[in-house]
Length: 490
Ligand SMILES: Nc1ncnc2c1ncn2[C@@H]1O[C@H](COP(=O)(O)OP(=O)(O)OP(=O)(O)O)[C@@H](O)[C@H]1O
Picture 1: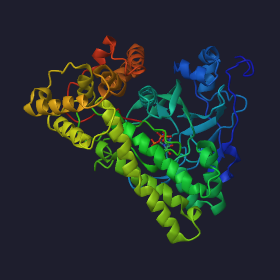
Picture 2 (picture 1 turned 135 degrees about the horizontal axis):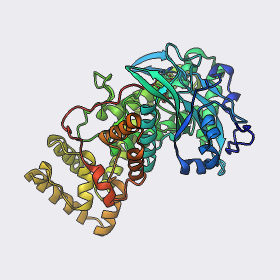
Picture 3 (picture 1 turned 90 degrees about the horizontal axis):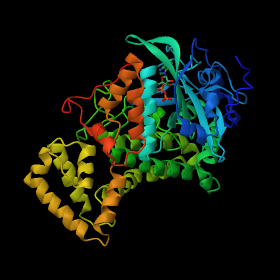
Picture 4 (picture 1 turned 135 degrees about the vertical axis):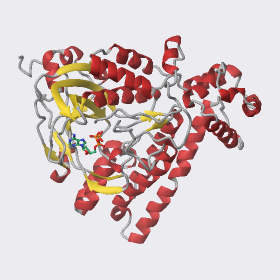
């Protein structure tokens, strides 16, 4: 085995998180695995990060992506955090993840490099610290698809299999995902500090978050109120993008909401096929708390939990602090709605605003719900003017709606081709449909055949292309009216 200094992977770490008080993390070592094998490497992302692709593809590269070798400059640590899980507050922390370090990219950007599935930590509670191959590939596929759709998200750099099994409902092959994120600061990190930390500790966390993610407001007179408002703005944008793409996160616990406004934790998530706001993906979400249509309200609820952690810093007078927080939080739904509306206008090829746009949209969505229309394909069909053989398009109701829409398009200055262009860049032709993701995972995990996943990743990397190769990925699941199925075992 070559010496790690000879393995010039290109890591360029500068670890700022370690400057926070010790209570925010525990220094850890990844638990070496028996036979690391590189399953997939995201070469374009590696290049963006300034990494040496060939070195990472070597045997030693795989060992380093499994945590068997710690690169120079890394400072592996497990982050402490808490969170509301399905409404219940609990202490959490990285139980199977660890921050390897913060990479400074050639463009001077700072990003977290994190292993997920790299062994037990002091926060593992009863868990084994490990992850199964299927779910790590699932996170890889969906996070990269989200990125290509233009939705802020953590990224996936690589998956290595460990050569070891993890025991879930059955014995499954183990794997480690290398995740890249603007940071792993979560609402839950603040909740942890507010519950168990000192006033100084929470203040140092808030200052750190400001410096790292919102430097423009760092000098504001009430910078903690500005932090709250900026996080609200980012989430108003993020959740609008989720809703517009038909994405269901599945576990919007406060530990799965980032301060940076990136989507994190691709557990039981999916893109909606047939349009129904009540769609729930996770089988453990028996009450539908995290249903598609609830996501904006849950985000508002989570933001309120984040706001509570900042109260002592918003104002010396408690009542005044509560009032400031409430005012900020009360703006979230309106901000979200505005972003959503503007995205929906683009999906319909509309450049300007008219008062009746909301009802035009609501009418379309309620028809889609009634006729169980496929969310993505309906907008896509409107885009390409090739109305599919679907019950919705044959109804009198739709014909009337179509006429109103055409009249509305006619009342703007832009010509038809600009409208079509706008629609094409706003309505993806292909999304990671769950049955296609499952199919790719099954071939990969059970048959060691990665070709299905590679083809899927290929089309997902260019979702707005509207190319013939995408056609076969637009088909609905065989049981499109049935309940979603989840890929078990995380
Ligand atoms: N097998 C495991 N061993 C130890 N801890 C675990 C294990 N699985 C989950 N956890 C911990 O339980 C908590 C909730 O798990 P969840 O599945 O939501 O997160 P995750 O997917 O592991 O991580 P992330 O939110 O960073 O994507 C996290 O703190 C996680 O680290």
